[in-house]
Image (tube, rainbow, N blue to C red; front, top):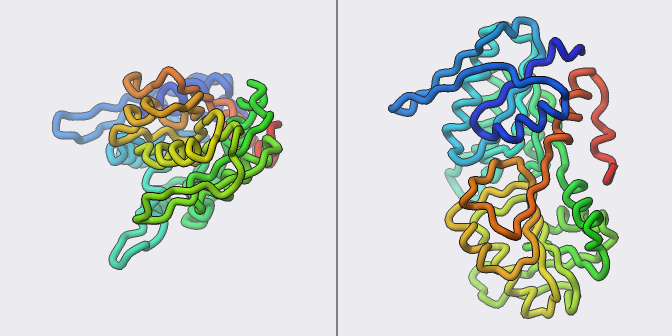
Amino acid sequence: MAKANLKLFALNGNKPLAKKIAEALGVELWPASVKHFADGEIQIDIDKSIRGDDVYVIQSVSDPVNENFMELMIMVDALRRASAHRINVVIPYYGYARADRKARAREPITAKMVANMLEMNGVDRVVTVDLHADQLQGFFDIPVDHLRALPILAKYFIDEGITDNVVAIAPDHSGTKLARKFAEQLGAPLAIIDARPGDENIGVIGDVQGKTAVIVDDMIDTGIRIEESVRALQEAGAKDIYAVATHAVLSAGAATRLRDQPLRKIVVTDTIDIPEEKCLPNMVQISVGKLIGNAIELISNNQSIHELFEDLD
């Protein structure tokens, strides 16, 4: 599809990333005004015609989660009523993704509800990065392009020459799959933090003595899991400790907690716009703008995005 028919919109969830995606595509962000009234109501006006166009709306459903989600839903409604040809939503960080099953009786599956609401509102396609669980793609009956940030995170370590004597660390047993993939990228072994509910004694399964340990997770939320992992790794004799995650949620005092940790680097992406007060001196933020931009270009030209999943390419 010609770029003249491709329209890119940015909402308030992550405007810096939206600008990088637009730069990667070589297009301008299409004008729209998003207003918030004093009582919290949201009004959106699309300033130019998008009739018959292939539209992409960029919005991370991050803090404030509900406000950003409502912005997205109202924008989609406006686009549908303005006769957009296809409505594609780019959700770098998919909020509510952790509520993907019933862990206890009478619990909602909110991740599925969000998928239902997007579909019912008229969304044609979802582009997202590193869902909390791969099976969330099955919550949708429309195409979902699930992009991976792991190769570009691993590439940072390769470019910095941090590949010798490295061991990838899963912060718990459920994170083993992700940490193993990272380990494969660096040709490194894998170790697991063995933390059991109610047990203050946290161990390490695997050899980290004298090694550079890289804690790998999909997100850093409160930072408690990183804190516990660092303590266990120090007790097990790790030499240097790094933390890697796609989504820097950083809630509930996480920035303060991480500031006190002996981490050489905290490597994250820009799927979430990090406020200045939460940016730490040892934090490295790698952009997924080019990754998402490449995906949008391929999708708009009806080409396969398989090449984006090739390791380190």
